[in-house]
Image (cartoon, rainbow, N blue to C red):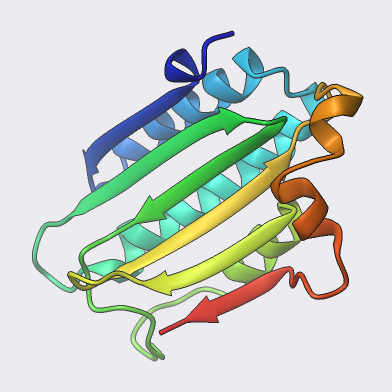
Length: 157
């Protein structure tokens, strides 16, 4: 399948109604890329948590956007969920158990949280797809991700 057909870049309003639309777009692309049902469940969970974090926490009272970029390449699904909000910060005015990032990290093969240069936060999630051929698994970022130096959760500032 052509890699250009295996990607999307969309912007959604950061409202609850955007969550199912964006999640369906990601899982459809994952399925087209060869993700198994089990992998799709993990992807769905991680993406739901990431999108929910933007909707609930990224913007105070002002409306904002969810920036979603997804690509299938080299036997991997990459999902980037970004916002233009205030960044990661402790919040005592919101309810919840605060387990979203832990669930995301547990669901994907690699999670990196970065500060966006224009403001806000971006979660970069990598999922290894089982359907990848053995040739795809022996080169590129998979090799780097499997090394001892690779971390499951990383942040940059």
